[in-house]
Image (cartoon, rainbow, N blue to C red; front, side):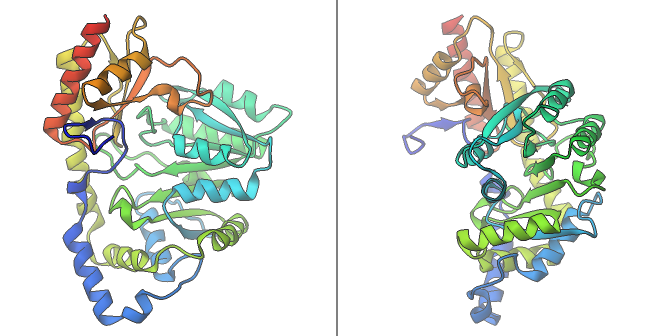
Length: 373
């Protein structure tokens, strides 16, 4: 559908192609293939290229103490593989997985594929509803894991406050429930100051922290890292060995050299600058064209704006009419535990479209809103 001429997508989640450090990646790759072609193109360790794992620890710990002395870091083929591997090693048919609701559909589908029963915890402006979370954690059938994206959550763009992060950790520690802290967007901050990850509080060894290079380098490299308790990471590595043997060594070697040779803070500021400009444009266009009629968050980073439509607007019909006018949106119920739930929101993405497409797409949304009002 995206190949159709004139189609604009607010529906995907692709990083901005203009943010890719293509020249740097090409230069590093050329050097590696000229100097060490046999090694770069060979099999590697399932846990990941050792030098990347070391550089990755430094990268993860650049602002906060994320990787603990007792932790192990493994390299995965994108952060999506973290959910898949975790589901594989902990889920039996009917096991409970607690998750933010709405949540990243890739994680929900990964857990569903292993027969998990998903239990959603409603999102509030500063993170999950703690009363609901404790009720689920203390239920007779205790969840195997609680899944969360504290930074610029997908799809809502919500950032969980420091106080709620601490409370989530304390509750999960109290009831002995593992936390999967998914942080694909944390480096893409466009306003405010970084907040300590849940993993930084982890003295009990109950938190897995997943961080992706897809959003800060390039998604085609299929690279992510997961830090967590060593015993659990060993099981993850065994499951990964069965799944794909190891993540592509070429990507790992290029990433390791990039981390070693380049100023990551400078690179991340460049990338965040691109996203800041696009996010601000989308928000200003929404305000100009639909202000007072729709509600939307102002994300501090990430890639998404969560738009809530007036109660009298049918979300599915709104999405359908936008598509007729060549604008793709994702309805909110695509991200909920109950896929048939009535959700008045749509997720809009600002990283993929150009500035002109953002303006045109916002105009389409406004025109459809007029038609249905």
